Image: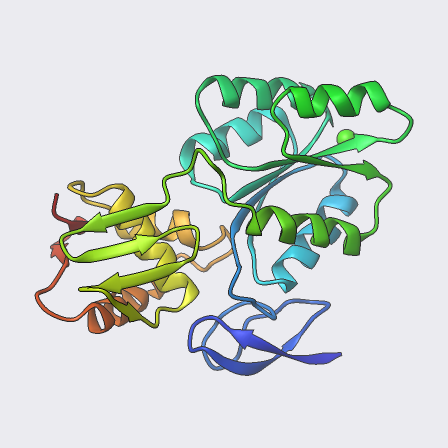
Length: 256
Ligand code: CA
């Protein structure tokens, strides 16, 4: 089935196959993307369920990394920044809730949606007490899960920094708006994501690989230059004087 989705790379409609979530033929973007696309970590050990959830979320425009155990999730969490974690409790190396509690102790504030078994009211309460933002009871419909994800994507975290700035540039992370000198700039989703990463690490060089890790999912072909394209579009839109500097051979930096 061919559906028309919103291409985040060019802000245009492009044909996509919702069920398979392929890349847009003209720009290489994946799926019927919406402007709320996040990078999501999906922790689930049942391969078929993981695949179908990942496919549905990618079709909604999210970048999805997959982990099948607590230890794999831990590695991803330490390496990448996520907008949301979907966490199964019954994992081969223990209860996912123990990982969540550890992340919260480390000060990780990102939203976490816990997948939990039916008939376990006590477990659900434990999940929320343990730092989960929401839970879905197995078996669940993909539509229900997608609705919960949409709600969490809209919910501003009180603990998250709201406005990032550099000089006269301001990024309101809750509204996903960028202003320079008070003028609203029309940035696309990936440009916003790249700018947010650079602002969060202001004064530090961010390599192309780090940008790709933070803003695109692991399936993106390693040789592509998506991050370069996004940075050059960003520079055009941000105008003068330049804010993003290139450190040849190292990456990009926004000066402190
Ligand atoms: Ca499981």
